[in-house]
Length: 154
Image (cartoon, rainbow, N blue to C red; front, side, top):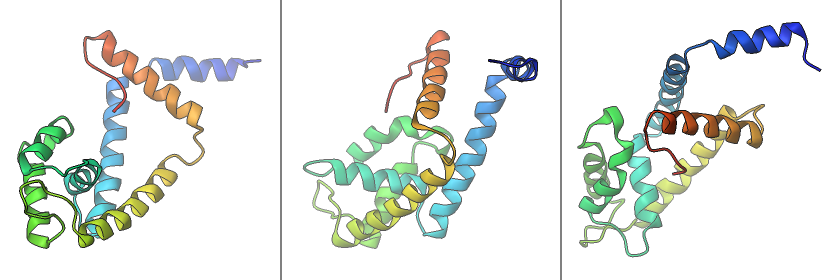
């Protein structure tokens, strides 16, 4: 049974601006994630590059990596993924054989950062059930579609 206090909280929360709260959440989450990755000498576009190159059966060229990750760039700009791929080529984490694949060093970096990412996900999701998380994403996706945007699982 809902108390008047709980109803008041729901009413007050329902009146809050979603754009502010999604922006505020994005800012603090990105700062946290990017800071943790930077401490490991990795950028978020580099992490995306590792994942997508490793997940491609025959590897990916620099242009293919950029094309795949274009939707994730946001404020990072159109050169962020290209710079990430170039950095990995220079560091020896990607092969330069036309269809880039991860080297042993690249696979080791991916394993190390995957552990970091898994730990951050656990920290961020602490006290939040999978059902609550899924409900929050469902609501956000519905809001996006309500105003004509494309929203769906990535």
